[in-house]
Length: 465
Ligand code: 5AD
Ligand code: SF4
Image (tube, rainbow, N blue to C red; front, side):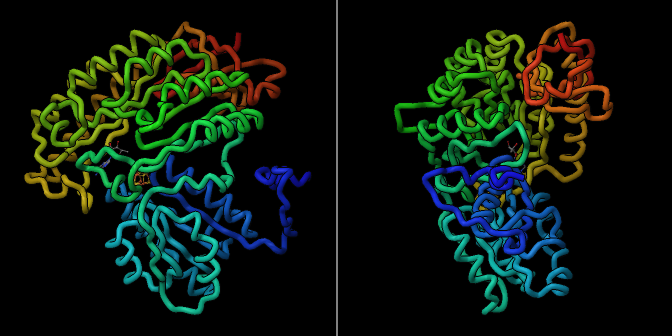
């Protein structure tokens, strides 16, 4: 196999690389919890590990080094991490030379880091979110096993963009591209600003250069990532719309997706630009969180339900083929059934294709952690079930509006369940299964026009034209 297949990120002709033989490599297992931003961070960690002489393996049992990149957004994510870390105890007993490191949003919080340290003395190091620069040194010292028990190294959150580290990307045709880090919004339920720090943006020049090189590698499904992409470039001349304009102008056909948008910062000018763009995704993920003005205010979201609905209607009018999705939070402190009914009314009115729904969980250090009168656990779960039922019925039929239409689809390969079909992703971010006839193997990684003839609850079916 040519070396470049093995080391796709070692392509700078100006640099000298050390190429290890397979026996020199140590094996690393990186497990990621949480959002896409965290997955993108892990791709950087794996890229860095490769330059340190590690290859990635798929199970913790096969590894010499295990890194868990954790998430703090909800309690259930944290519990999962606790359970999975506990399960490593036996592995470490059987293989004492194994090195185990925790990092990410959960361990950025001092109370969580200390709890891990006390509960799991077999850990070697505990780091936070800002780790790339210090990781080589920490791995070296952890591997020397000169001390017993985990050492906690938590740097201040935020500020790092790690431009010099090339991620090792998963996925053949897709790529995550972080455009910023951190968040300045302070929604009262959210721990992210506390663990990722204040917002910092990459330069448009670096982002455009990276996207160009990804497209040259045949990666045509690009996802720009930021906690609030609409405030990209704050304090500089180039805002998010300008960035999208530059990316849209790159030669070729591709899809530029982006998440997450914030309704208070998502301007009509951005929607107007997307409507006329060639390569910007027709999927808008616009988290509403609640349909009650009282709760939106308590959440410090910075918009009203009326403003949200107007924006969503504007997007649908300007981009008729758009797919709208959202996030909804149930059981925020002080929420009543009346407030919750406002949320149900809103989702019926806007008619989202799908919604990510969450039961509120209290996060230490956030403003809402001190708010009174949380609904009972039974109430919250009854409302949550009602929300799932209402949204489920909307989602079940919402793709029917695409039947009879022709969609541009990036072919990703063989069908999901039926090998006679191919599968792909439309410019709305919708999975499309289609029949293509002879020569279909050559379509992987290419765009095709698909006439939709059937809408399923979470996908479309059609045929190539
Ligand atoms: N509890 C439950 N869900 C939360 N989210 C953010 N913070 C919390 C919390 N404390 C949800 C929001 C956000 C999504 C990524 O996670 O809906 O949009
Ligand atoms: Fe992502 Fe937020 Fe979880 Fe951190 S806390 S991994 S930013 S969802």
